[in-house]
Image (cartoon, rainbow, N blue to C red):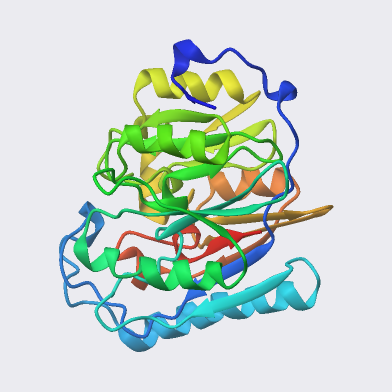
Length: 302
């Protein structure tokens, strides 16, 4: 398998094999969450300004939604890891790894090589969790940065991955991922500092439809998105940056379609309603001070 830029895309979505979406959720407790330094533009002016009790309340509210979805059978399971003292950003569980499953049913986990040293401390705990579940662990060359599910997003129901690069993840990392997972990866170049991970600006909601912020991408990459989705719904940079609207979590299990999203977005909210999603609006304002919202705060796995 290989990576694809716009000029190299020589397949159609309907030609690709089917895959079920992951329905297990892993989070990390916010015990040591704070803004200690500036790792992205959203953290500027927020160092030392996290309201701990409010952050804990927001996190627990989201946790209880996942637990209710598990009780209702809309999720298979919910699990959480304890936060580590020196890993203040570990609450953003989407970043230390990315989960997949092979054609033969082998569960696979690609470990991250994160840019910032404090975030590198998170990875061993995720590795141990997934080793205990029998996952095949895939480690990339140490000189290639890769930031997990934040920069590796699946095409709904198809064996196709989208790889964000240019801000936190190296383009070459996706070449190793495509070969290791035996799955094609479409390369998407990120060019706006506000949208430093793919999960902040690109959100497929079904096989044909994607919500996307065009300003986040190079022209060639945006053309790749338009080539592979029948319905490309443009979300303004202002709405997306203000509400982290595309950093929501959509869960599809048969006829059940759920979205957990930070409150306040209008365009994204209305499109989700039109596409049949039951919406849970939540407050992630304390976590947005660090540059993340609902999608960042969980890792979906098989």
